[in-house]
Length: 472
Ligand code: GLN
Image 1 (cartoon, rainbow, N blue to C red):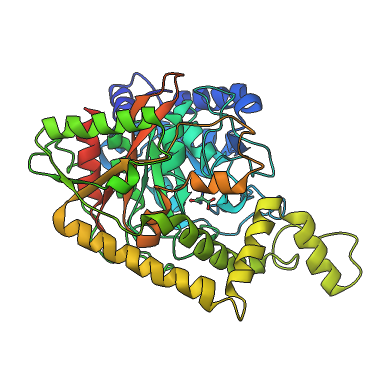
Image 2: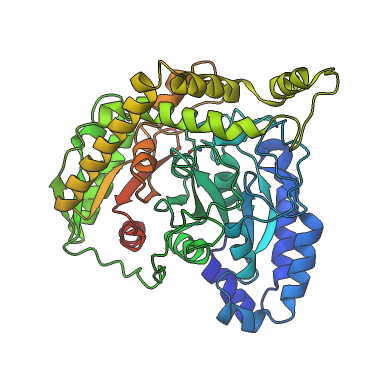
């Protein structure tokens, strides 16, 4: 269960293991741990065992042709799966069974993967600790008193606790990278448009991207190669050719220019995080990379800009949950407008309501120019900062999060403190570039620390290779 894709494929090729045995073992482990960790909202037991039994027959050939043949995968529960409940961690979709499958998930399955279940998340992917799920928080397997990060906490834990080999999350402002960092696994947010968003329940459409978690960089590279590419069902997906990400992993970083922005190493950064990330950069330098100082002068605005744009888009996207079209409908309503109000009041949790109100306010006439439009202008300035930085460097290195995982309950009543945790991740979504989080150390109380490597648009191969060099 703790094996990587290559290691599992070796066992399959030699006949020492079969997909049905591995899948059964994984499902048993999920059942043993789920009461405690709360990783999965739906366990896809029968279907997974059925698919695994089918895979047994020709697995020796399949490992040659299908990149994820017989590999157990977990998917965040905001990606639609035909016939399998898709809740978004919300009461309002608590009984929603989609009639179609998200493209990224369909591609995993076409590559031979076995879907073992749908993972827990902050409601509608809004959060940084997984404590906003209507179905209870997920626990960090490294230390169960701590949060796993969010919003894709379940998908990070699925990989960290050996409940699947790889998993998919979605990242609107850090929701793959921050939980990867908190749980000690690798997680990547691809370039905006690299992976189809068809079937991903929208949070903030100009920021959302699906991406993989893995136990190592190679598994992430391989999974990204499977899910990336143009999709005619998502007009924002890119035509850019998908390179062979696994082949790009040479580990050679000679001459690679790594930009280090001082704005990301100042006040508010935990001392141990700082030391680990700086040591990781130093190691890359020893392997031939060149460190250059760059500046991201508008960094101090990123959290404000993100929380205006993300909430504005969310308030619009979440208007469709009205008790008519999907999921939950309040029972006791007597009129149409009561039905809308009560369904939304009872269906959404506190954080989602806070964001709908914030977003509606930012978009309202009279405030639009002062907030939403201004935020969009600063977003453009951030894009310019990055364009300029990438003239001087090939990659940018920062911490993934300012601290290691925090305790369950520590920040739930302080939304601003929670939002500040996203300071190094949200910029990447605003600018639309790709970034990876790779483990780079452990704090004195045993909690993982993540290094974030950021690339220019569609430069995933280069980030993956640098992460691979770091991992080695
Ligand atoms: N923590 C951020 C938020 O709450 C990011 C969430 C995400 O990437 N989905 O908005």
